[in-house]
Length: 270
Figure 1 (tube, helix red, strand yellow):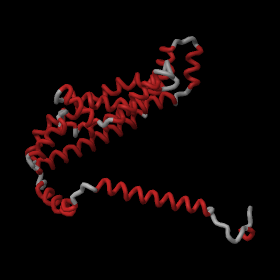
Figure 2 (spheres, helix red, strand yellow; figure 1 turned 180 degrees about the vertical axis):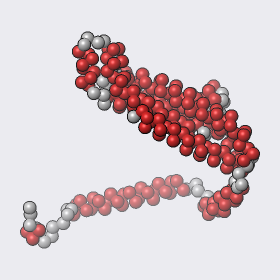
Figure 3 (cartoon, helix red, strand yellow; figure 1 turned 30 degrees about the vertical axis):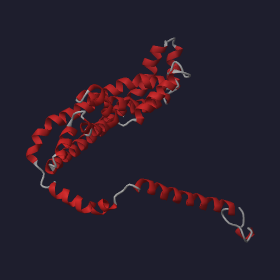
Figure 4 (spheres, one colour; figure 1 turned 90 degrees about the horizontal axis):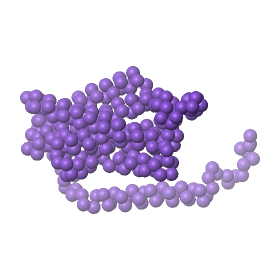
């Protein structure tokens, strides 16, 4: 071990050039932050910003007390929202499974062509928010629950496909080699070697995505894709803030219950 007393008197932890580089990096970050702040706020009307606390207090006062008599009218839209999330999740999982098999290195039949295509589908699905999918689908096929279901399914492909193909690539190759050594064909190797190893992960991923989809489906009605979002949009349009309070509390309760259900299912499966 080096004796500290033998070090040069002018020794420092970093060299002069390293310290200058660090300071230059910090100054660049500060300059970037200032520039971004100017770009984001160049169209801001600061009079509205300073008045925001008063406006928030005014709206908060109108939201209380909640209009609990409005609650029965929300049961059907809430049921529609749950159906959008559930059917969209099922559709997304069904579509994501073959995509994941094509994306995984150890199951894809063509690493040069099919795997890049599958990865592109996964990235494209994850890059577009479900609200944007719903907006596009409402324009194409019209408003309603079908647009919401397809939007949730398209959004779920990327999430489920990415996590599932990673789980497939992490399977134990010894079990697969043992099944292949018996003379099993590709379909049998997949059925008996890969599927049993990834099924717990698939169930866990599906339940987790269903929980996320319930939250996302609550706002699809804002663009006409059905569900409780339609009621929220209608109440906000007529400034019925006491009804908005009931809707927000119902959404919160639904998300809490779905979180508890999904956590219980994942504990039971995994």
